[in-house]
Amino acid sequence: MLAMFFWAFVIGGLICVIGQLLFDVAKLTPGHTLSLLVVIGAILDGFGLYEPLMDFAGAGATIPITSFGNSLVHGAMQDAQAHGIIGVLTGMFQVTSSGISAAIIFGFIGALIFKPKG
Amino acid sequence: MMESKQKKQNTTLQQRNYQQLQQKHEIKRPVLKNCIKAFFVGGLICVIGQAVSYFYIYFFNFTEQSVGNPTVATMVFFSMLLTGFGVYDRLGQFGGAGSAVPVTGFGNAVISAAIEHRTEGFVLGVGGNMFKLAGSVILFGVFSAFVVALIKTLLIIWGVL
Amino acid sequence: MLKGHQSWLFANRPMITATGVTGGPFEANGKLANDFDLLYEDLWMGKESYEKAHRLLLEEAIKMALQKGNVQKEQVQFLFAGDLINQITPTSFAARTMQVPYFGLFGACSTSMEGLALSSFVVNYQGAKYVLTGASSHNAAVEKQFRYPTEYGGQKPPTAQWTITGAGVALVEPNEPGKQHPVTTSATIGKVIDMGLTDPFNMGGAMAPAAVDTIIAHFRDMQLDPSYYDLIVTGDLGRVGHDTAFELLNKSGLKLERKQFQDCGLLIYKDEQPVQSGGSGAGCSATVLYGHLLNQLKKGTYKRMLVVATGALLSPLSFQQNESIPCIAHAVAIEMNEEKG
Image 1 (cartoon, rainbow over the protein chains, first blue to last red):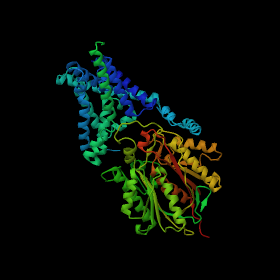
Image 2: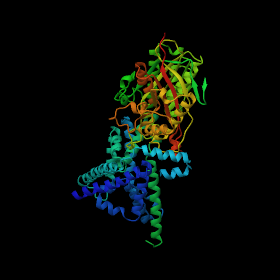
Image 3: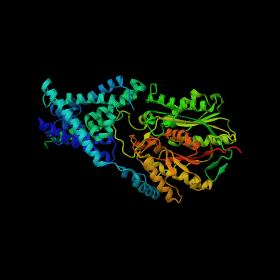
Image 4: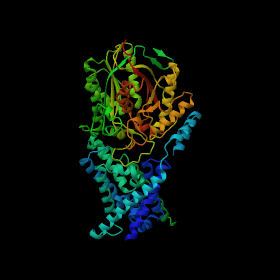
């Protein structure tokens, strides 16, 4: 269990360092950087590399935004295997729904109860 | 990214000379310091995520496979609190990518836009602006996943994989 | 009178008889807090939106200037003012409240001197008895429009600047001999200068060439050299832009001392405040000039000053369309009126 915490810290930290290098060296905006990382996550799952990373690093791989790309591909593949090629469209948000739903729901609640502080 | 933008603009000699002169005075970004801070902040957020996962596994009988969803939702909830209380922007200035890359950064992008545009009403303000920052992540995530899954599925159908 | 190619000499020496300067919480913690007439504790200022608070800043600064100058708003002929917000709505709404005939100006952060130059010209040629001029900005309203929602965790690089929350307004009247007020003696209007810089987080670097171009034009048109002024102050070049401008000016043959060459964006905040490269915004040059610098002029710290406000004329859209950042700078020369006798 302790080992998982350690690897979550290290792998999560390293993915963020990649992001930071994209910010500071490649001078990309946060929008560009996060979009790139999501695409990388999707491609890695295409090669079957992201699931093993998640088994190894736990939250270190599921928390960074790259996991979003991974879950979208996973959901698409699952449905494609069950229902054929149309599954690529239908399956995407099956696995991933919580991140976006949570952001929308808590965004709305946030707008109801909070005022920006500048 | 900056170099390719400049090439596209056909800068004159005078402009290029000025840009070289200006570069000397530009305060350089502390890349190493930023990377170290990003590493620690990002790592810490993931450790908290791991703790949240174990909490759900032990107390709510989720499995390691299914715990991803509630974990992410909980982390976004935390980012709502931090964003609403005016803490996340300070964390962002310190941690840079360490706070932007985790899913909490995605939550912060959506929630901060929602909170900010409430002054323009809930329909046009909040609804119309919520995805200002995060929209590109959703767009490229979905589209790249579509391409990857399509290619992989076709390769399976054709017996290549 | 036209002097040279792009400058005016104000032979009738219009007077700045009163000023009003308002600011926000960050400015209250800054180096020049004592030179502000009114400081607000938070960015909302009791209003329902940042934009409405932005308007209040300007309205209160105008009221303060009128009060100190002992003039009613009904007596004022014209208002020359602007800000950074889309369609300069905070200024236009303030003009609606004031009911003064209104020239809305957009020069980004150079608006203050654009307004002072025009006001001085109008008063110099008896086009008005009382003119109000000013500029304002509000940190949160500007961040919301140009950059990111204020609670977003974006990381600003060290070249970025902090938009000040504040308004600076001046009341300009025809000269009255012997009255101890600052007078404007000349102005140089700048051209749009673009050196191809594209980073919206490095405005100072983009604006420096515009400041230098206008300063060189001023000395050429007025046939003076830098030793004529004991202070040449730029609006908001910040650390990066200011150092760059200093080097450019020396390269051009104008001999400037480091002490003589300052920047409002560097004067307004303390070193400990997290403002990266310094302050900026339409309100920056206005609040620092109409508060601190004119106070110093009246005390005798400076005899003659040249104020060069600098603006970056980009929009969030132009940046997304891969345009570079065109900039402009306007200069106004100010000194104390001569004593009688």
